[in-house]
Each structure stands twice: as structure tokens, then as C-alpha cells.
Image 1: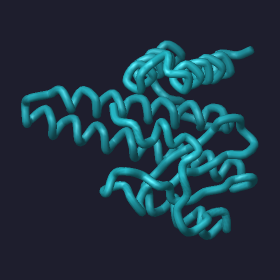
Image 2: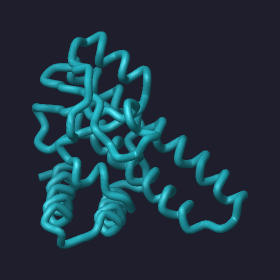
Image 3: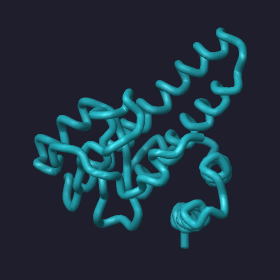
Image 4: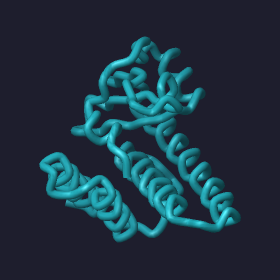
Length: 173
């Protein structure tokens, strides 16, 4: 088993612990960030496989969520602006990884739809992308270009559905 495969096995064990209630969402996010950074201190520059794309997605998502948690505890308004810039950068990079993955798999065995969320801000904006050929690979985005590409590929279902990981999506951290 290579390092990427080990990371995804470990990630699944973290998910299982979270689902069972053995860890909080914040503990899950911290552990996933540690795992991502222990594998690589930076994402892959050249993404020539879905696994590398998925790792980059996880890397940028973990970094964005870590910045969001740090920003939440920051009392300095200048720091909040810096955090917002970093959060936006990481989410944009995560969206780039998502687009690369979708192109690598040519939108095959993909299902996407808006998800039901408690957040009024995210309602009608956040969508879920299920990669059916990859176990437990559920991606999320608000990116219009990704949304349009999913619609053009004929894999986006209009309307909204409950997320496959609703317990995670709708819990705060």
C-alpha cells in the first residue's frame, strides 16, 4: 500500500470514529489536517491521477477549515482579513482540484445535486458531488464553473436532497 492509499484508509477510520461519536467534528478536522500534513507538506503540483486530485482536495479543504477555526478565535480584525484571504485561496484551490478530478474521470459515475442545509447562506449554493467509483468520496462546492460543468455533462440533478453526510455537513465546528 502506498502513502496515498494509507492516508485514505486512515481518513476512513477517522470518519468511522466521527460517525460513531468517538470524536467531535473539530477533533476530526484536526486529525485529518495532521494526517494530510504528515503525508505531504504541500499538495501535488502535477495531478496525473484521481488519487492525487482527491488528496489535493482533502489538503485544501483541511487547510481552509483550519483557517476558519483559527479565524473564529482571532480577536484582531487585521488577522480576520488575512484569514479570509487564506480561506478563499484554499477553497478556490479545492475547487481547482475538484475540476481536475471531474476531467480525469470524464464525469463518469458522478451524481451531483444541491443539498439541504441549515445555513441560509449556503441554501441553494452548496452542492454535493458523489464519485460512485471511489468509496466514500463525496465532494462539496459552491463554485459556479463546477456547477455549470456538471450540468453540461448531464450529471447534475436539479432540486435539493439531503446530503449523504448530513450529520457532518449540518454540524458546526
